[in-house]
Amino acid sequence: MSQVHSTDVAIIGAGPIGLFSVFQCGMLKMSCHVIDALPATGGQCTALYPEKPIFDIPAAPNINALDLIERLEKQIEPFKPVIHLNQQVTELEKIDDHWHLSTSTGLQIQARAIIIAAGAGAFGPNKPPLENIEQFEGSSVHYMVQKREDFRDQCIVIAGGGDSAVDWASSLADVAAKVYVIHRRDRFRAAPETVAQMKALAEAGKIELVIPYQLASLEGEGDTLKTVVVKTLDGDERRLEANHLLSFFGLASKLGPINTWGLDILNGLIKVEPTTCATNIEGIFAVGDIADYPHKLKLILSGFAEAAQAAHAAYRVVNPGQALNFEHSTTSGLPTIEAAD
Amino acid sequence: MTALTFIKPDGEQVTVEATNGATVMEVAKENDMPMLAACGGSLACATCHVIVDDAWYDKTGEISEDEEDLLDTAHDLTHTSRLCCQIKVSDALDGMVMTLPPMD
Image 1: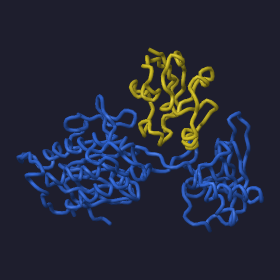
Image 2 (image 1 turned 90 degrees about the horizontal axis):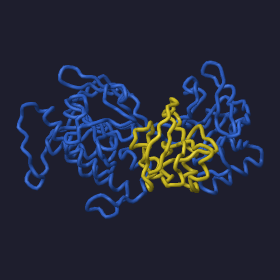
Image 3 (image 1 turned 90 degrees about the vertical axis):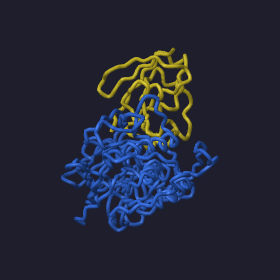
Image 4 (image 1 turned 30 degrees about the vertical axis):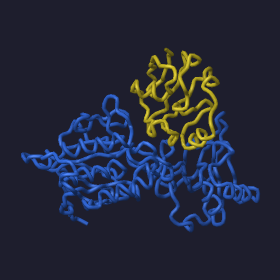
C-alpha cells in the first residue's frame, strides 16, 4: 500500500466534467488518475438523477444521465485513466515540482498538475446538525446498516422519511428490542407497499412511529448513546431511551478537505480565471460546477469547455518549456499515451 | 424592484433589491449570501433552505409535494421553512424578511 502512483494530472471528481477532463488531457498526451468519493463514476448524474433525461448536450437531443456517463467513459477509454473510487482526497501538498495527494484510504498519488472537478463537493451522508453527534458515530450513530444482526435486542431510533428509513424500520423490527421511527410529517417518500408494511408493524406494536418530530439532541456517555431527544415544531419534547440512532437523510455534498488547501473559495465555489480555469494556486485548476467566475453558467456544457481550457493550461505546467501544437482531433486523431502507473 | 432582507447566520441583516420574476435563491446567490444552493434550483437538494418571517410566509405561495419531500432532508425545520428556489420574487414580497440557517 505504500506504493506512490505517478501521473501527469490528478483529477479530483469523476463526474461528467472530471471524466471529460481525462479526454482533454489525453488529447494532449497527458496521463490521468481520477479520484472520487462515491462508489461509482458519474457524480451527481449517477447519485442524484441517473434516470433523468438531459436535453442540452450538443448533438444528443435527449440523453439519460447514466447514458451520458457511459458514453464519456467510452470516450476516455483510449487514454487509460486510472480511476480510484470510494475515497476522498484528504491531503494535497506541493513537494518540489509536483503535487502529492493522499486519500482517505491511504492511496498516494504524485502529479504535475491538479484539476478539481468536484461539483458541490464529495458526497457523504447528510448528517443532522447535532452538536455532539460525532462523539457517537461508529458505535451508536450510523448512516448505513452493515449487518442486521448488529442490532439484535437493541433499542433503535430511525430518523428520516425516505426508502432507507422505511425499509430498515420494517427489517429491524424483527430483531431489535425496540424501533422508533422519527419523521417530521405523516407522509413517507417510499413505495406505498413498504410504507403500508411499516404502518402495519406499527399497529402491531413492533414499531413506534414518532410523528411529527425532529431530532433535537443526543445524550449519552463516551460513545454510548442513552437518550435521543426529539421535538415538534411547537417545542413539545419527547425523550426516547435508545442505544442506537440510524440517521437516514440521504446524501449531502461537502467540500471538506478542499477548504483547507489555501484556494480562493466563496460559498463552496472556487474562484478561477475563466480562460484557463487556473485557481489562485499555480498548478491547480478547477472546472465544472465547483469553478466560479463572473456570469458562470452551471451547465455540463460549460464544464466540458472548461475542461478543454484547463487541459491546455495544465499542459504548460506538466511540460514546461515544450511547444504545444494546437490540433483538431480531425487532424491528430486519438493520440496513444502510456498508462499512468 | 422589490426589497428582500436576508438575516445571515451571524445575525447580520442585508437588504437587497430583487428583480420580479427571479427566484429568491437566484437573488441570494447574486448577492453572495452564505447559501450553497447546490443543485441550482432543480429541486434535487435542500441547500437553499430559508426560514421566512411569519408575516410573509403566506405570501410565498403554495408548497409542492416535491418541495415537501426535499424538506424532509433538511434540518432545523420550522413552520415557515421553504426552499427559496421555489419562491418567485414579486411586488407582493416587497419587504420580505428571511433567516438563513447556518451552512454546515
